[in-house]
Image (cartoon, rainbow, N blue to C red; front, top):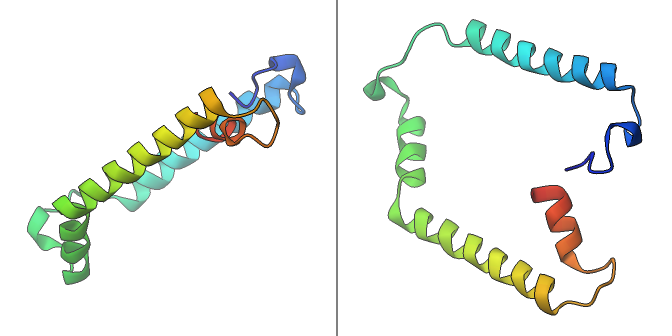
Length: 99
């Protein structure tokens, strides 16, 4: 959505944008293929890795993320439907950045 005005409104030539995107995809796959040589079994992680996995998989964190996500959605819905049509309305930045 950053290029919502169309290709002609981009600050760079379209060919460079496509070349940059292709380079980023190729580089990410190259780094992944070089850095991740073999699959790691679930039990072979470090103690810190197991602790992080337990925290990320915990029900408390899941509910916290759900509540925060719902709160943001409700706030943005209220800004969309009840906010003034001014550029300081947070819905414009939310749609431009997050959507």
